[in-house]
Image (cartoon, rainbow, N blue to C red; front, side):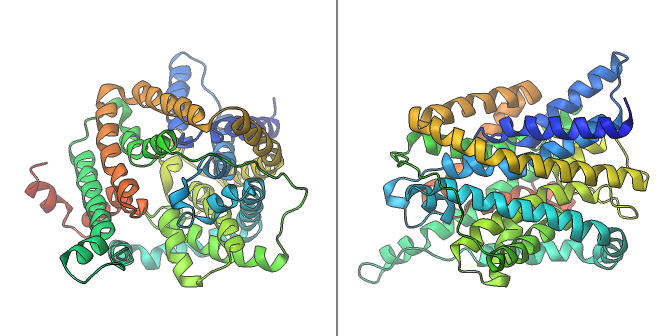
Length: 444
């Protein structure tokens, strides 16, 4: 089989396979990629190595497909209860007003716009511009992270405290969510230091060291919230059109591209952080722009971070996907770059074509089966996956992460603070104080 045909088939299979993965709430593409790496190493040890023309496009397509299609469970299976209807994100508002299909497809349009931006905008310019930008910014990366951390903590504004007489009770009510946010950040940071300096995960699974913690911080609380929530998903209208126009798409691309690109380029900055910064920088108020920009941002962040590893003259390793693949393959030529770009384009087209069909199927599933059962199944799959990869030590880390991840859920603070698990330890290490803090904590 020729290399071009191998790339084509691997991209199509990866995009189609990720469609199933993306529709399971709380299950992350990086979890499955970790298992695939183990399987690929096992095949190589058995004398049946897979060529890079098969493995790399397959994994690139999985990342693209997941980043586009995981919008489906995040909207259709993320129903809030009645008390939260006016405080949730616009995607959940669309769902509760019977417009979940429209909200999902709007995000999909934004994701497709993000693929176009990567292929026709970033792709041709990245080899010329990004190596220069990296050279200029490299000495200041640590301090940039500290600025981001400061902004995240300062933008966690007190909530409540608007009712009742002045006094300590009103003051404590106002600062309850803020205190929970700060506690979440620094507890996650402590967990990050422990995993960085005293990882309990077996050395042969070191590339999945952070995975159980992320599952506990983000995936498990979401599944538990769905299980205990008293919400009912209302009947959904499936229309033939979406209320968007070229101006809305361009504004979404500007906001989402800025946030996702920032997160993809800077170390340990995630799409949520990039979206927060871009939202403040562009001051977008249109709910349609917000929903579509999230689709753009996710694709740029996950796919763009993976693509950076293959940019000639740059070779940055950003994001979990690139770190996982780095142990399998080292890009060396322009051909590798073009191979990944082709896989991204193919996977983007296939995933968007599948989106309408999968969204309708998920809506029909939720109408017939209580979404709590779907969340329970996803929870079981996630726990089994963590155990399969990291065994009992990984489950212990997952439980600790779950305890921290439930704090913002229970006290109405931002879940973004859970990213202290990466931001704080890495910022400390990049500015040279990480070992001193680890020594103070008794970790070294």
